[in-house]
Length: 74
Image (cartoon, rainbow, N blue to C red; front, side, top):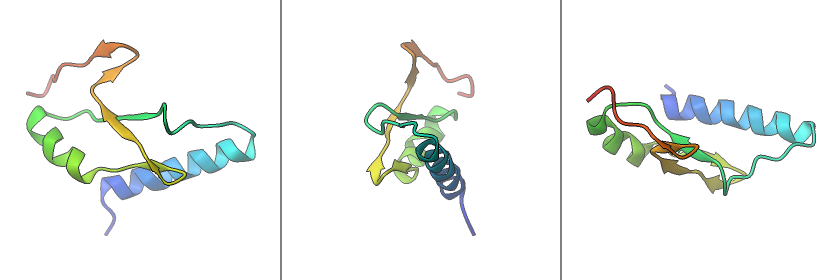
Protein backbone atom coordinates (compact mmCIF):
# COMPACT_ATOMS: atom_id res chain seq x y z
CA UNK A 1 0.00 0.00 0.00
CA UNK A 2 1.28 3.48 -0.85
CA UNK A 3 1.49 6.18 1.77
CA UNK A 4 0.94 9.88 1.11
CA UNK A 5 4.65 10.49 0.62
CA UNK A 6 4.78 7.84 -2.14
CA UNK A 7 1.71 9.26 -3.86
CA UNK A 8 3.05 12.80 -3.70
CA UNK A 9 6.41 11.63 -5.08
CA UNK A 10 4.64 10.03 -8.06
CA UNK A 11 2.81 13.32 -8.70
CA UNK A 12 6.03 15.29 -8.38
CA UNK A 13 7.69 12.92 -10.87
CA UNK A 14 4.84 13.61 -13.33
CA UNK A 15 5.23 17.38 -12.90
CA UNK A 16 8.98 17.03 -13.41
CA UNK A 17 8.48 14.92 -16.55
CA UNK A 18 5.97 17.45 -17.92
CA UNK A 19 8.39 20.30 -17.27
CA UNK A 20 11.22 18.50 -19.06
CA UNK A 21 8.98 17.75 -22.06
CA UNK A 22 8.14 21.47 -22.30
CA UNK A 23 11.72 22.71 -21.82
CA UNK A 24 11.05 24.01 -18.31
CA UNK A 25 13.32 23.51 -15.34
CA UNK A 26 12.49 22.79 -11.71
CA UNK A 27 15.51 23.67 -9.61
CA UNK A 28 15.66 21.14 -6.74
CA UNK A 29 18.14 23.37 -4.89
CA UNK A 30 15.50 26.13 -4.71
CA UNK A 31 12.45 23.89 -4.26
CA UNK A 32 11.31 23.15 -0.71
CA UNK A 33 8.63 21.05 0.98
CA UNK A 34 6.08 22.82 3.18
CA UNK A 35 3.89 20.51 5.27
CA UNK A 36 0.63 21.65 6.82
CA UNK A 37 0.02 19.70 10.02
CA UNK A 38 0.18 20.09 13.79
CA UNK A 39 3.55 20.73 15.45
CA UNK A 40 3.44 17.30 17.10
CA UNK A 41 2.78 15.51 13.84
CA UNK A 42 5.29 17.56 11.83
CA UNK A 43 8.24 16.16 13.79
CA UNK A 44 7.33 12.55 12.99
CA UNK A 45 6.16 13.27 9.45
CA UNK A 46 9.30 15.17 8.44
CA UNK A 47 11.49 12.21 9.41
CA UNK A 48 9.65 9.90 7.03
CA UNK A 49 8.51 12.35 4.36
CA UNK A 50 11.21 12.73 1.69
CA UNK A 51 10.56 14.04 -1.81
CA UNK A 52 13.15 14.17 -4.59
CA UNK A 53 13.69 15.76 -7.98
CA UNK A 54 16.41 14.21 -10.15
CA UNK A 55 17.63 12.24 -7.13
CA UNK A 56 18.09 15.36 -5.01
CA UNK A 57 16.14 15.35 -1.74
CA UNK A 58 14.08 18.49 -1.25
CA UNK A 59 14.57 20.38 1.99
CA UNK A 60 11.71 20.96 4.45
CA UNK A 61 10.72 24.50 5.41
CA UNK A 62 8.21 26.30 7.61
CA UNK A 63 8.19 29.48 5.54
CA UNK A 64 6.73 30.41 2.16
CA UNK A 65 7.80 33.53 0.27
CA UNK A 66 9.23 35.01 3.44
CA UNK A 67 6.13 34.45 5.57
CA UNK A 68 6.17 32.28 8.66
CA UNK A 69 3.19 29.95 8.98
CA UNK A 70 2.14 29.39 12.55
CA UNK A 71 0.33 26.18 13.30
CA UNK A 72 -3.43 26.61 13.26
CA UNK A 73 -3.85 22.98 14.29
CA UNK A 74 -1.94 23.11 17.58
